[in-house]
Length: 381
Image (cartoon, rainbow, N blue to C red; front, side, top):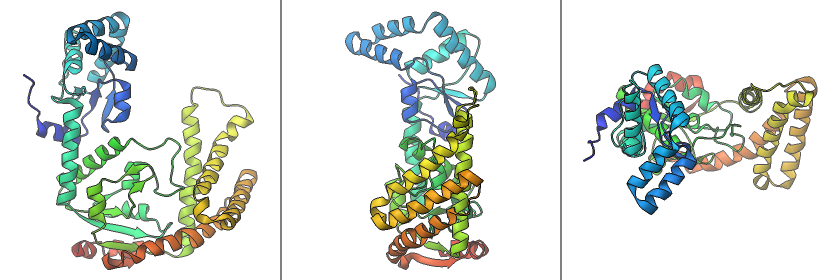
């Protein structure tokens, strides 16, 4: 008989960012895990595959025997050493496998034999994931939302950082929400996005928040889908419009998509090559080449919607700006293509979408005006 699932314990683990040791195979971990979890598997992907085949062919006892053969000797010693290091670093930690069954019990037993006690989560990943899904649905149902809208470049993400009870959906999705919004290291899995969102809402609700600011988003943030319940509720929630003048918006877009993004590429390249020698001129130019390709590919993504003539114009402006930046370090020419995109593409698209949302509009103004009136706005929600 399996031990009962302790929902309160699992909620507490997430609320307090308790370190978690996931002993599932790497492929399972990559498909979905939790923010405070690290992967120290009992079996690697190939070993798990072989044991799974043996289980189907000959049953559990034969599978266990094969597993003990595959994970033995030096391999077993190395894995136990990893688990011991985790337990030493995180004396408050827990371990789990998929269902809280054989893998986690085996890991716990081998650790105990080595003199280390580490508790496991009954029900494992499956139970923890189920609880986060339930919590997410409950949080959405019980919370009120204020949706922050505004044209591209108004600085909605920056304003969210200043608003009480704000949830940064784009931060959780690791994407800025436009064709230019990708990061070089990609996005989390759909499951990880949902897990992080559920935990973030759970934490804020535990602190007493009942209303949340969210940025106006479509169904997708990059390749990730908003939960349907959240999307439905956002579409019914009060809308606040952030308004800033064009030059301010150009400067914000320049910072987000040129200054910050090039720096991101530089740091990403250095991190991924920290163990190699980067001496050649070509190697030193790689981050800028990747950054340039990113901007050009992002523009290419909206070529059809821009139309051929407008695309060619903006593409020439972008190429000129990149050439000047590479040769002199001057980024001012980027303002030209940014203004073209804002005024002839993003603004008309947003104005069209806003017409459908006018009945939900409760306030509009600059970031200073919204911050000064946020308590009044929350009362309207």
